[in-house]
Image (cartoon, rainbow, N blue to C red; front, side, top):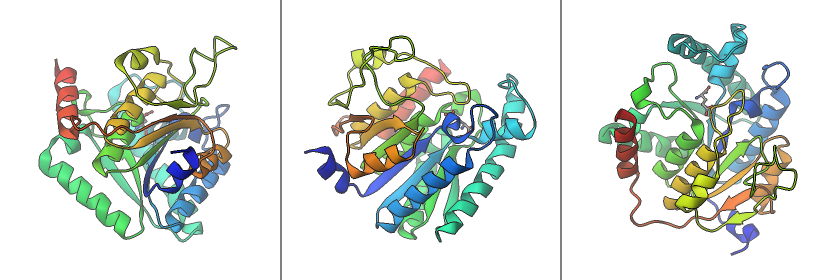
Length: 285
Ligand code: GLU
């Protein structure tokens, strides 16, 4: 199926945006124009009758900026305080921007515990279903303020894939500060080529993804490919594309060849809870 046809058929879309795409790199202040464009596209997806969930980072970055903390906080309590401060500011801006388009956003904060605990996970799924049936736009983040090392996802790439799997989304779009997946590191090798489409993420392929970390977020390409793999296994196509210009997000939705598309391949052996338990045990060991 070509991309145009593929994208036209999507019914439930999760869009993830990272901290570095939400703030001006020069100042660390929120990039309101970019946020406004993102919100307009998300509102329009909802207007077109599709379900849409936004996974937004930025709590810690915005909190840091608010409290004039220039360095990435090392102490957990500082990081958690920044998250508490930044999350409300972030939501205040989203609230205002969505209101411009008569849309109701809702905040959903999650930890790994929410997902591992059967009753919590079922509750979360039911809440998402209810919100989406109301035409509300859930805005998800990790509950960074209370999370401990053992129960944190740590990056919103993984979280967005887990959310996509939880709510049976058919498309995950990870907005990043790179154009997509390259056959080599484009920051080092100017001849690196963007790969437009990947049919199947193998272990070798995942290992190739490396682990670059940007200044404001925690996710590098490795976490994005790992996230694509979870989403693909759960049955959702995944696109990694650049958030530098929100036109690119529109292009993805129109089915143009933008970013890298990782094709879904529903893996009958993939069970969200098994995956989470395995990761949880790894984190504890
Ligand atoms: N949850 C973190 C925040 O909102 C971001 C995690 C990430 O960078 O992926 O600040």
